[in-house]
Image (tube, rainbow, N blue to C red; front, side, top):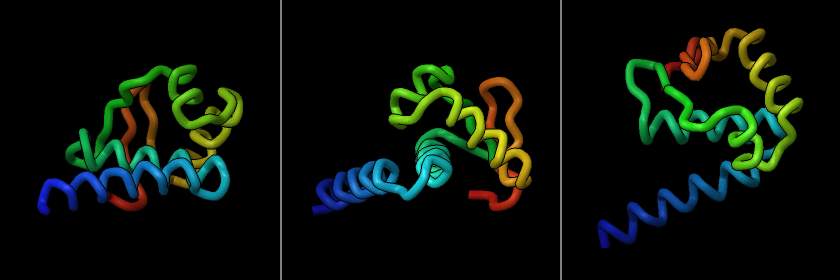
Length: 91
């Protein structure tokens, strides 16, 4: 039961990421999900380049860059290369 529960939780997070409203919500949900799985101390190293990440999220590269810039401008994240640091709300 514990294993099934963990798998359901994982799948629900994946579904939430892909049905989030707007590209910004989808991107931020993805970043939080990745942080939960692989991040520490408020930082996350992206495992995809921007072209791959845009395909994973189903959004264009230009839109991806724009949404990352918006998250940065709103002091939610700080991006340095492939490293993302969560500023506004530590996960």
